Amino acid sequence: MTTVDTPASAPPAADGDGRSRTGDRAPRREVGVVNVFSHGFLLIWALLTTLPLVWMFVSSFKSDMEILSDPWGLPGALRFENWARAWTEAQIGRYFLNSGIVVAGSLALTMLFGATAAYVFARYEFPFRRFFYYLFIGGMMFPVFLALVPLYGVVGSLGLLQTWTGLILVYAAYSLPFTVFFLTAFFRTLPTAVAEAALIDGCGPFRLFFRVMLPMARPGLISVAIFNFLSQWNQFILPQVLMQEDRSKWVLAQGLTALAVSQGYQGDFSGLFAGLTLAMLPVLAVYVVFQRQIQTGLTAGQLK
Amino acid sequence: MKHGKYPLIITFLLPPLLLYGMFVIWPYLQAFPISTTNWLGYSRSYDFVGLANFETLLRDSALWKAVRNNAILLLLLPILTIGLGLFFASMLNMGGRRGAAGVVGVRGSAAYRLVYFFPQVLSVVIIALLWKEVYHPNNGLLNGTLRGLGLPAPTWLGDPRTAFWAVLAVMVWSNVGFYVVLFGAAMAAIPRDIYEAVMLDGASRWTTLTKVTIPLLWDTVQVAWIYLAIAALDGFILIQQMTDGGPNHSSDVIGLRMYNTAFVSESKFGYASAIGVVMFFLTLSVAVLALRVTRRDRIEYS
Image (cartoon, rainbow over all chains, first blue to last red; front, side, top):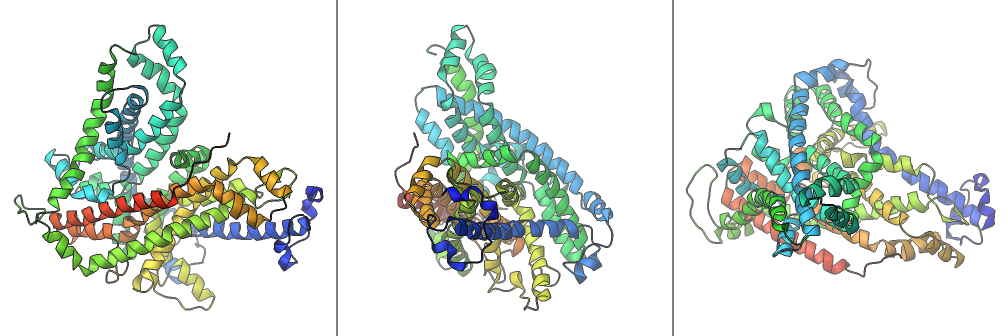
């Protein structure tokens, strides 16, 4: 196997059955074939993933004529007026702001309630602890559709239909199962010695939580916050049911579907592509910057 | 922490419990009794009708088409997504040269991972609307390409024979990247010396993958299976935005049936809740089944 030390000079994949040989007999040959082979497939999938996104971005600069005549063509000019039209006329700008307001509120509430409940489950023994814990995490398994009709009634009877407050409370409530599940596991991994030392020093239980335990749990809090941010930002069915009527309060996902519908009537393809691009770019930009945290944040929940 | 723990427990647990109880538990519990009524959303009064709603849904042909589609999703979505996910993850993590240090990843694997994960951070609504345009019969990317190659250009979402499969492809497309990263992380956690031992024994790459890597990843595959099975019973947003269940319910799913019954075409809250109850039991049995079938001993590296 020492021959593989300089595989840069490995011959290209000329031999079709190189793969069937064992590594010991023809290591170089296999390296070349597998490398070309694996890079080929990986590249194809990378293209499949990016091509639709790039196409949408490029199309957002085209005129409707250009979109209709040639799907592969390039725009004749950088028509930022498409973007401006989507931002103001289709009100993508306003829906952005609305989504921001709702998610800011619901995320703060989710994190506060999720962290306090998880902390109690992880660190205290009390009657019916297991019952309450399973009550919380059981929510991860239920299809939201089952709750939609009664939820509409509950929110309505509180007078919270078509309000951001209603949406914030509901988002937070539906994010709690996963948040509690994840953070309980996380609080359990934290060492108890620090907490005991703080208590001996006369630290009260509330201060202990906010000053000692929360800072120690920061990595877990960040992961679950990223997860919740994305799922609440992308939430669609809950606002669709609870916020259908008041157009001015819609969130971004609703605004985009409305744009798609009106585009169908007016044939304003460029406006739709511009709206979708506007909604996509900030999320992608944030993702590219924080890719490591986001990838681990989203996958960590499933590995636990 | 003996004395005075209850003030903290109550302050910390009661508000989340109230919120959760009111907006999650209470609606779920109410759904069952509502499913035995003929409640129409706009009226205050309704009658108890027993299991009549469930009898109706046995004869509801649109619903059965939806059930069939969810069953297909249940079968194909996990197989295709996990298959492709494992394939690309193993290419990324072990597709590179094998040297004395063991099996290594290909060059640029970080860039691949970055790109593969894109669909995961986009909202499903954006993915649905984007792909609806990609599939557009006249000016879509797909048919533009096919025409350029001189191939026939189907109407994809407008054709009952292709609509459902076109959406299934988008579902797989949007999920694979996440599982590449998930499986990749799990593969990276497998100790290198296991691979060194395997290589000394002269195992081929294929043997290494099927006899060593995948068995060691089984835990993660099991979790992936459950999540994808639950996702397969949903599919609501993509179907609603891309085909609205059409043409002629050929691409319908149970969640969309339920939503349309309750909030769009009619407001039959009672009947819609009965569909919801069916979904609940389907989800529950799928989760239990998946746990049973895939159960194995947990592997810990120490």
